Figure: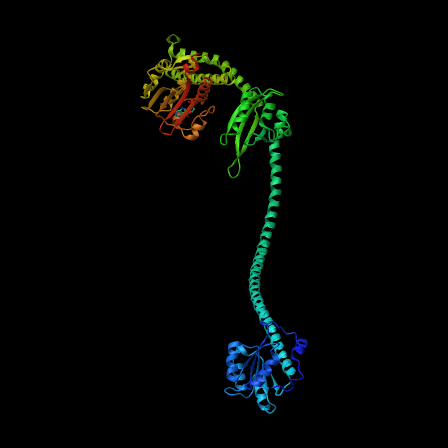
Length: 581
Ligand code: ADP
């Protein structure tokens, strides 16, 4: 029932004051719970132009419709059959789904206590019957607007709280990442600090090493200067070639001898240097080969003779030796030219003097020896006493010895001064040996030595000077006889090997130590042993023998062991291999 239905124009007023949505679907749903049908109709009529309105006849019906249709606002009477307004409010507020649905209590003026209770139970507003229709509309509209605002706010809050959650999880994630990055950073920082410390230590070490290096460099500089001074003051010319044959160093003597300045040859190809030197030397080929060939050889030391013709005549001994680093790597070759012009000149003069002296000595000596022999053998000279015979015997022995020395000296000096002439022709070695042996037989017999000859069936023809070959064989057989004890063995063998004939004299004599063998070919050398001291000798025989062998294009070798005998062997070129000429 309305209080003043007559002064109301609900439609026009509502449209002016509330711009609520009016489409059928979007209009709010209002539930009117009223047991008075007249009142319910009036309320429905008042609100119907603006809202969708449904009605319930009591609290129970109101609850069911609320649960089924979920109204946006409930207008609820207080006293009703079956379920009162208070019960309905209490039940709805107990359900979370409906706690935001505004409930407006419709009460009589006398229900004040009840009204307060309902407000406590959760009703939002109340209207005291009878009420103005406009008030009804306004209160409903206000509550719906408030609810809508609350819903919008709620949604906003939900969205924002969702954003906040997302943000919070992002922040958490970023925080975690930051923490990780931070710990990584700390680790790095620790590492950097460690590295900085290590760098500092290394820096100090480097500084020390640098200082040591500077000192070492200074020492090396000094050493280099000292070495340079020594090398420059040397009497020998020196040249250092790298393994590729590039001249790397020359000393001042090199410039003095060859007139070649260091700057013209250093770091230039070896050919350039060879060309400059070639013009000055007699034996061009040997110089060429000596320089070029030997840089590839990392081991051997070799020596050769060279004669410089221009600008001054000089005789050189050229030595070349490999130079190795401390770690034994090959770094090049050193060539040393020793000026032996003066030594050679003195040698020649000495040889000439010895040659002359021995030649001059030989005539009176031959005479002395001849007369002593005559006195001892010729009966016409007269009877000799025992003492005279003994003394003359001593004189004869010494004259022979002197004769031997003189002859050896003469031979040697002739060889050295190049005055000995050899007449080389094809020789039958077997024949020569057979000719020689008879003169040794008495000596071997006297010492009961066993001589064995090993000759090839086909006698080799060698190219040599007959007298020279005889002298070589005589010297070796004589030594074998002298330095072999009684009943020892002496063997002479001949064999052909390639282009040469090897002739060996082997004895079972006293032998020679390695040190003695090293000195065998030194003039006047005689080994210190009783056997050597017991027999006469000059210490020149082997020197002459070897020179004689070499002059005939052969070579000589010795192998020996103390107490086990010796073998002296030499070669002579086969005549056929040289074309029989
Ligand atoms: P020598 O006139 O003294 O024999 P050589 O030059 O012929 O001079 O020999 C030099 C030295 O070599 C000898 O004095 C001797 O000590 C040693 N010698 C030479 N031949 C032999 C040999 N067959 N066995 C042992 N020693 C030898």
